[in-house]
Length: 469
Image (tube, rainbow, N blue to C red; front, side):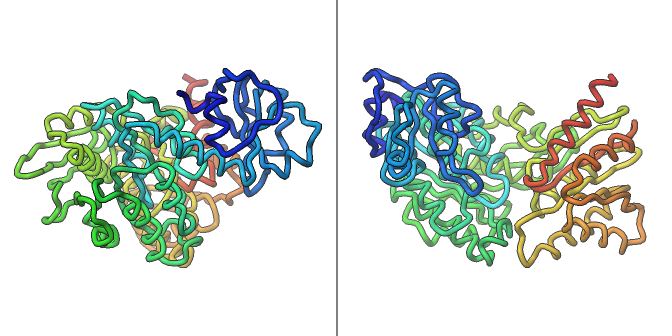
């Protein structure tokens, strides 16, 4: 049995086959981007906000796709298509979800679902590293966490896997996480925080909390719910479940409790952890003010699966588990703190803590907009701006909302000066400015929301550094 065998895939999607394919066909993989199709793939024609994948079925065929998963109305309107088609009555993404749901039902694997406003990917990575000290573990790649990415991740799980750790995102609307739970059937669910991220879409922080709580609602009575008790909105979710609840945090009542957190700059971070009277000191090369709580969340997952602290702690010794903050060379001997993955108030403040810990001739904060914050956007940007004034020698901004960083810095008669600002469509100009400005002895933090694509700026600067080395 294999999820991509033709004989299982067609009925599991709820589809019918049009065209000739050998009965023993096994698709290499499922691909939703026609530009990435390779021979033997199944192309899934997903209708998105900007493009409808049905328009690229011919391109997928030209690149060697074995078949395409399409909706019936399109197939009937295109009888001339020679590529074999798997046809569903609704949308191909629904067929993908049905396929993933069926495959999940055949597996003995236990599933851990992780959600929250900030830090889901990091929490997934560290939790998987902890669990891997005892179990065979699968973790969803990158941030494949929505109604498309999560089913694709499930289809990668093989029968020998003990535990699958899946990031569950989306949550742009009520029901998003409930759908993911219906497909993945998690046995363990962890909510790490609720922050005003996507507030522009959801309207209120209470609505955001309600969407995250859908994961709690999706855990069966014989499962485990893991909650960050330091976040009041998360802690309140304990009342919604009949499953076992494991709490973690710095608070005195936490079942998995941390104390004495320490941020050690480039040397990493440390904290003490206590469970059922057992106490250990944790030291890790992972960097950032967020690391103690991040590490604690992973320990809570391991504890839910019966692991001892001594089993878990080796997972924290490798810097490779770090997924967010990276240190890379910049032009003319400068150093870049690359934290361009995304931006929210807690994550930017954490990264500024990393910048603060450095000894440098100049500490430069290169900060882009924190997007989708709705009515609290100005206040949140000003909070970060006040911290910039305490930490940095210079500020460079990118985007329209980032002007509030500058206003807060300029309101303080301190060492930090606003050096330059760039509009959101001036990414190349920002890269050129930094290429000319940075020099030996500088440490520059680059951080902004995903839509700004600040990773391209980092790539440009590191390329210059390697060319001049």
